[in-house]
Length: 152
Image 1: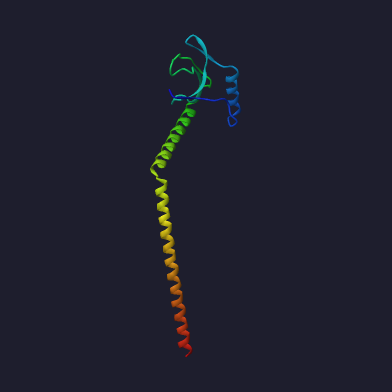
Image 2: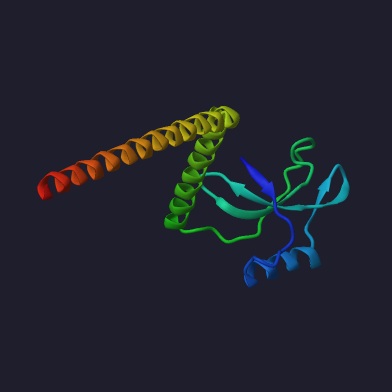
């Protein structure tokens, strides 16, 4: 089972979520971990069967495995599970793509390549302008010669 600890409600969460987190803070759940009262943590399950569903669990579940467990959220419909799981898979794909594209690009060498391309384009542009000016002079000269011989 995979899950994360959930902090208290923040300003971007919905009213319902804030109310539930406030309820957890004002009326905490406790487990009997090793014979003493231990405040349970509010966590989120990310299993296929319960994606995003919050529950109370012993904060020492990894080391002491006391077994305290109590769902905070109601079970989800099959459609909601399907949608959340699909979104989670797409998110993982995007994260993997982002990491692979970031690690495969050497930024300094890419900048150097782009700089070289820019310099080559500037040089090509300069040559084209020079050739264009030359062609303009040739055209102008030919028209002047045409007019000279036409009037003579």
